[in-house]
Length: 353
Image (cartoon, rainbow, N blue to C red; front, side, top):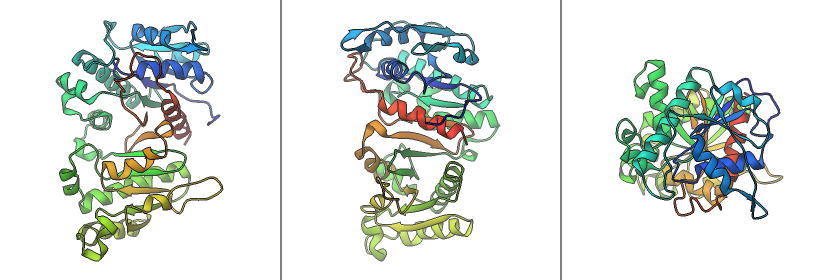
């Protein structure tokens, strides 16, 4: 954990109130009070109070206070284990756990938009986002139904603040844990559309965003591997020409711009080469994958509880746990806060650079 003091507080958005977001937030404040010092929740006070009652020590519920803030800077004044909450708008009526709700989707979306705008204004140091439910977000209507997820919503806010079209604020998703980092050329789209998204411009842009982001964090030029799209990376054109016609030229262009980038490599083995193990350095600092599942399955297989979603390319730091709203267990008190804690740890480390 970084011991560098935060210049501004870190905001944690509550996520969908029908999911496990409020519960894992409450557990994180109970389990890691020192790590979360100087942070606060952007959400609903009453929802967090109910979530706090779900947490228990030795099977016995232990009171966990919730403090209502009126400004982010008050996060520094909250005692350990207490959950500081900045109320988003009016108090939220109780939402049934585990059920898709337009009301829940809208409230969760408003929290993200408000917190992101505060980050763009420099009022908070970073944003850690608890899970949204995409169906609830869509049911909430405008503007939330235009966003497949957090990444696109944050891109929209950044573009709005900078006065630019959305396409001029390119972002990418990185999923990372202690062993592996992967960055995606495309995110939330069908596999058919994802294949069409493997273009020279998209691959080159992904490489440049990955290079810039990891250079800042590592303090040196990162060594980047690139996965092919096809089996065996196309086998010299036998299984497809995307590697020859699109991916390899983008790699060459990135190398000419100062990137240390290699590939395209067979996607069934490249992630093993980039995996860092105890006592053994990885061959690469990260892998650029061509589409969502190609890049995320390897990281999630290593352990969802350690995975962190990081949005690269934004003019703010944003991390998120590597799981969804888990409606099937929401409200039962059994959700594990480990990935949220790792997301906060990573956000704090990135703020230090």
